[in-house]
Amino acid sequence: LAVLGDCYCTEFRDRHPHAILFNILNRKDSCGLGHDNWDYSGMHNCHCEQRKLVCLRNSASTCQAASEVLVKTIHFMKSLPSFHHLPCIDQLLLLQSCWAPLFVLGLAQEHMVFEVTDIPTASILRNLLLNHQKRTNEQETDDSPTTLQAVHNLNSCLNKLWSLDLTAKEYAYLKGAILFNPDVSGLMSCKHIEGLQKESQRVLHEVIQTLHPNDHGRFTCVLLTASSLRTVAQSFVTELFFRPVIGQTDLLELLTEILFRKNI
Image 1 (cartoon, rainbow, N blue to C red):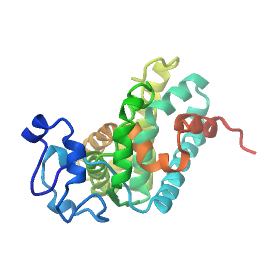
Image 2 (image 1 turned 45 degrees about the horizontal axis):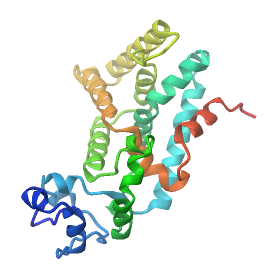
Image 3 (image 1 turned 60 degrees about the vertical axis):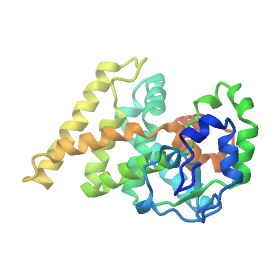
């Protein structure tokens, strides 16, 4: 929560234990917490700037679009016979581990863009006043704040995917390679899932060779880009895209219900 031209994140904070509140109440810059637009090109590398809390600018429409992407993601999982025939516990564990990177892949495939803005001052003050209460709640301490740095990381992942210009087939088999992750702890069919991942990667490699016969490094580049999706925290995705819609409801419970719901 620093002023763009005059950072308070170092020695001032050491001398003033309530520096965060002080900065909120004494901002003089024109890009204050109520400003509606972010200029990413002019953003400096100050740590406190990157820790700024943000929210979706057009929350209603963006959350609706994100929800549609998430539902498509779960339906993709349900549509795979190889996934459907796994033990229920394995399906649940893979869902819990993989829904976020698969969701980010879905955002990229749908070419979904979004804008963020500062969280209003009143909301930040309220969070500060309730901070001690949040720390007593074990579940909430795991929440990942919707910081500008986290948004930049998500945008970086999306830009990498868009630069690859993946086809629908590449997206499909890449999703399979991410979904069937044998490294998830507690799996009953670990060896079988490892085989499914290798098969997904093999077919993905064949598709890439067919579509890009002269690009010998593309397969490796695609897999490396996919691995970077793990840096996007599930809790961050939940807080940014779905908390405005579901409130305090557990998102994983909703996803589990969708996954195991019988089609009528």
